[in-house]
Length: 263
Image 1 (tube, rainbow, N blue to C red):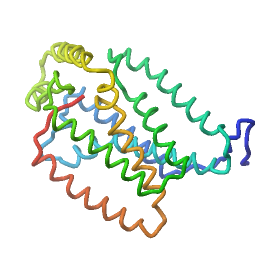
Image 2 (cartoon, rainbow, N blue to C red):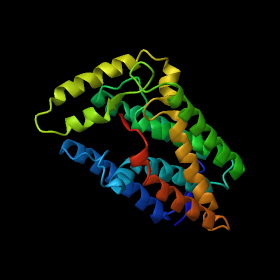
Image 3 (cartoon, rainbow, N blue to C red):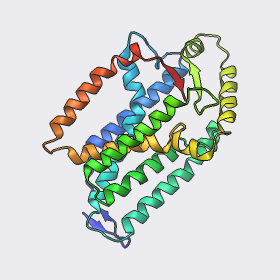
Image 4 (cartoon, one colour):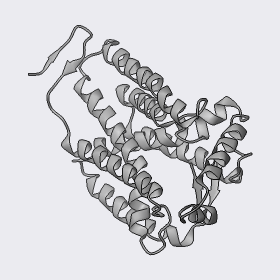
């Protein structure tokens, strides 16, 4: 039964199973990518299986987009509540997620960087604001594209290296790491060395551009919300065409784009 609590939050048993499916699929693909790496399967660079590259490496983007879709559903469930209740609840959840994510940072020895949980917390809250304020769809999409452009420009201007803001393992070294007998301890040592180098970057650059940073991943979440807003409208056919075209082009990327492992 739908209802509302004292904080003004409308509750409903309804769920969007498509979004649940998308997030679940993204989690399975992320798990497959990590498991495959540790099993010695070069999941990030199989030259004859580009569909594996595409599915594994787009899983995190899919997860962030699905998170943005959930944001829009939350906003719609509470659109009749004009008080601070929904915003307070959403902000509290985002802060709690970022704090709980510190355990993940400790495990990865990545304190001082935006990792997965902080990235989700920041991206979803920043996505919540324009949808809660009911900004026009064109303006939200423009913001998403600008965030992509700025983050992409930062990547191009700063040639990938440990001293310019990227943790990079060359494709050749990554391939060597898949071979039996490879000293993975050396790879871990390099990872820790690169983390130390990256900590020399200004804090704002780490927050905005490095790893699960604010700019690019918020763009994915915003686009997820826009997709839900445009679905079941006259623009839905356009969404499908963009998806089909992007999917077709993505099969060419592993063949024509010089690749570096950035993680």
